[in-house]
Length: 446
Image 1 (cartoon, rainbow, N blue to C red):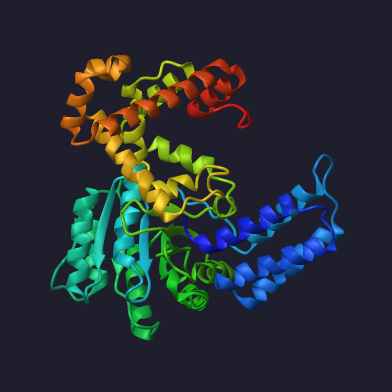
Image 2: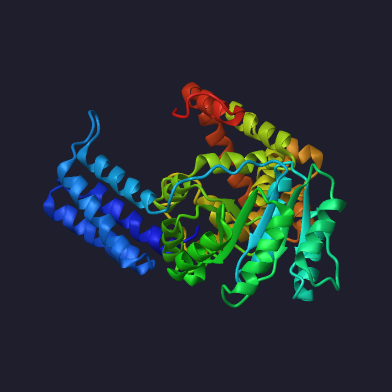
């Protein structure tokens, strides 16, 4: 989860409200002070942090909760609304063949982001063509070509050509019309006439549907000034913020860019090609405050390579017919859905009860061992777990390179999961709710 420290601080504020007594002036003052401190530590602009906390204080004292809502719940809602408000408006981003121009300063992560964006489109079923229009850095062309091979998309470059607009013209003639075309351009150490001139010439040739600025979140509050300058010069349609996974200045970059008028469309949350997320301020704040993000979780499920098997395993769990074969499918799906720590933040309550690094490492290591053991089982053992004992158990341990105690631990874990599944199967109301969730319809509340 990005901005861990800010999220931890804000979740602490919400817990203080939940555990506190009456919501009086003293509690409101304490809450406002804690929010202010959390925002400033995340590098959010001082004036912006002051204005936000003043609005929280005023609304908490003047507004009345709606019928049926407690004062405590209403105060939490006010905090949610105000934090959400500093991150700008959500802007639709249609996934269909379009022309995208990536701009930015040197070293901001444009080329890597081009590869991530290509992967994002292709996972949604849109074929992509990458264009190497950074004619000043041969290494950037090589990097983009390698990324295109990893993604499995089309690629065009003209080594030796020094005019970026010529490269783009040739690529447009080469690529078929049904591709999403992503153009990686050159950067500079600063915004100068040469950079803007080259961008202008490329834009005239490309006629892009989207002009996206790639910004490193480590720039902090200065990211807002850079976004505004590019916005004024090149007419941005959106911003992609990179390196939000470990940046102490993430809050400053997010809030500053949002204030610049250029909408944030994507955020980079890691080094891997899959670690690019569509930025939805509402979902982002929900995860930040430990309220989960079930919609993103379901979208990750939809992207599984063997979704039918994963859905069958989920249905078996809901009906009480859960086997080790189903568990193996679920663990394989978990591995495809992204890093375990980021996956946890999508669940309500779990995001708030954050595991420390040691617990996460132990959990991931245990799941890897379990997958190794499950891969060593025969078809009969996968479907009939009760036969695993004695010589079978020792054979599985040897075949998986694990100890017999690990195999017993897996069987114990399976048994507790199966009992939980049986409990779900016997709860008709909960079962119907989960069935609707996996089939994509119905009332979202159980």
